[in-house]
Amino acid sequence: MAEETPEVVLRAHPGGTASGGPAPAGPGNRPGGVTRPPGQRSRGRDPAAPAWGRRRVLLLNATFEPLTALPLRRAVVLVMCGKAEVVHGDPGGVELHAATLSLPVPSVIRLSTYVRVPYRAKVPLTRAGLMHRDRYRCAYCGGRAETIDHVQPRSRGGPHSWTNCVACCAKCNHRKADRLLSEIGWKLRVVPRAPHGPHWRLLAHSKEADPLWRPYLGSAA
Image (cartoon, rainbow, N blue to C red):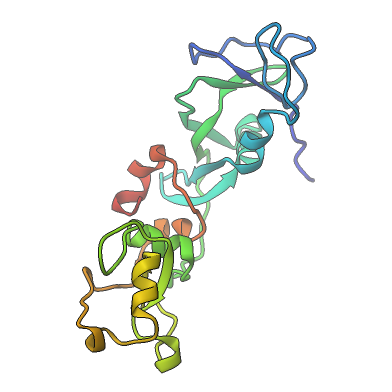
């Protein structure tokens, strides 16, 4: 049977503590919306929409092993159904309200019971994962990376792999073009290696990691 999504209301609460009960009725309070101060008018899109649509929540196994990053709504459903608990809430003090309870918007949740996850040794190569590995720094000059470069160009037989791909700034990428490092006298700042561990499988699909996730992702975040 499919889980029923509880109807909730996002309400800003400066103190960050649960006030209990449903959000009060009024023109500024719509299901799934944010409570606005009296007299403040809505400017087009619901301010809650970005929070529901883009925010991700780190899901931990019962053993605190990182599993995946969930959409906020899915994470809230797990908590409200008693299948997970909030480990870290939003430090900004935003709360979710339903008819019977209120809770902080979660950043990290933990499953109530352990689930066995199939072991997958290989971490998929993605742009997000590679940028996390190289900490968004150019492998050649150390500047802010915006692109991905193949150390040995694809046009010259280079593979698309963790050991041949590095984060790179646009300037260095343009200057290097399809040449080998030996041809231009460049050196890599760090030898690229394939990452290992379940947290890397998670980061491979997460463009940005919430700072509150770091204790559970090790040095990768």
